[in-house]
Length: 560
Ligand SMILES: Cc1ncc(COP(=O)(O)O)c(C=O)c1O
Image (cartoon, rainbow, N blue to C red; front, side):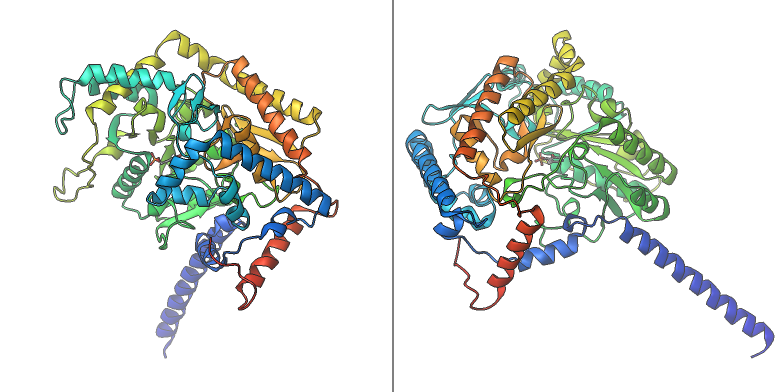
């Protein structure tokens, strides 16, 4: 080899090494930006989920999962059976109809199976079935088929912002507005023009597209971001829900791997570093609801195996985080998408953009915006919303949907948006946080005074229940709350959603019932505590049980 060849070989080697080091550094940065929890490792989480065996506690284990003394277990048993009797008599017709339909309704089977940690679910489903039917809504209440009235804390998954009567009006007035056109699809009813105008104003963005659900609006946002940036990957933050489409749900729940999704740590400099260095990122999705519990999934009672649930909202810190994200996305040509399907219109008329003082490139809305009907909306910058290229006529970004812009949905949306302009509603928004923060503080004060190991944390009118001492039975609270006339969604105490028509008097009634339910649960012994118990010791014990049930002949206790 002469000198020239040697130099060439050396340079090529050095370049290859530099490229490998760069690749390795980028890979390491990505690993560093992953959250330590399983939710931060989608692939591992899916594999682990496939390993967890089903087993159910028998009656004696059910009441002594924490090795409580016999006397405590007996109190729990008596309380459980008393509740079961109450459910059986008070909710008789509702439960009968639920039982009739459950066998053929897969959605219901799923929600019924995931109300409590699975070890407890068999006995709970046998004795404390939650009724799936209601016959009417009124003010802040729902009435079941037996005539029982419940304060509604489900918020209809966040749809119910102004009270059910308001949406009934939107639907009825909207119906009158478009009934001459009926269900015609394709051509628009003129009412749509006003919706487009208002949505452009509210979002501060140039264009609008209509879809049938929040999931679809998010799909379209991501597809357009990929089309325009010509990059493949989306970034989502740990725990954030963006609908059930595969790419935004890369872990448990999706049977196949999402290859083009990065799940990064929320509120972390490590994640900003990844955004600054990688070239394959088309967009970043932000669900501002995560401000209440960054890096944690929606808090469902089925996962309430101990008391580690945590939540705390810091508006300033989250606004700072969004500002940093905004800056990096602008620098790197990454599309910043706020997914406001849940929080849109709840925090401010201008949604999270207004509330946190940060502008996104695209915003998705849904839920309440349909005025009671199903909807998804995408608002975006003109250059990002275009579905074709002037210089490449066949290279389009396709999106359709038979029921997009359905006249009835558009008309109810028109009524909803019109309502936002009224002085009374503007006034509601002015001191919204003060009202809800004060209510949360009041309830926490009462819980503290009563010596109950329960607290609430809130992001405005979206609340979650926290537990202050280690326990295996916190999920039982949802059944005591129902018995006191509080309606919860299937995820239980993880998410209480208030509508903004709750008066102080309504709220005080809810607070009375909440405290009464927790006090009953305490009397019945569920929060008995062995001082040696910690959340970690609880999780270790459950892990040991799971391992024992994976071993052949390990005493697996059959089917659900
Ligand atoms: C933030 C967010 N994005 C998207 C969705 C999906 O909306 P939909 O259920 O209408 O498909 C939801 C639903 O809860 C949501 O909360």
